[in-house]
Image (cartoon, rainbow, N blue to C red; front, side, top):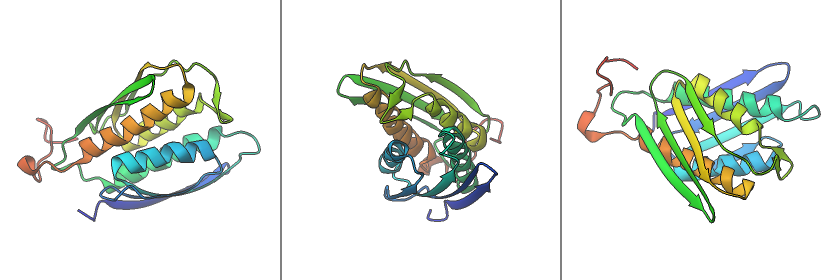
Length: 196
């Protein structure tokens, strides 16, 4: 399974991003985005998804973080799509994750169709100087290029840090479940259509 790896580089006038993924890793993260809180969230994905991530992003942070965050989601999605052979995978994954008063649910389908349902009632607009609106842009970019259906629901929480951290931890765990090889359907596309 060690072949489930990919590297993608995406360069624009606004960002230069390189992402390497190993979907059968140990949870190792090497990350340089210039956005420490985003790095912290990506560490949750790697750790809880048992995915090795090597991310290098240089963006126009002197303007704001929008381009960097969105383009990182795009590039990460491209890398997942490139690394994952959908034959024999479980396809669906879900996770509930609590952190103190916060609780989030993430459900994913490696459907081959991009779709995002995103419901996080943040209690404040920034965490550690990071604009929480940008998390939607990250997940939309990921969904569009990983070709997945993703439902994100923060079910409760009053601390915005806890709200988003539960989402990223649940995202990592849902990814891990969905990408896992199902020994009962090895080599089979998990769809009655025969294609994803």
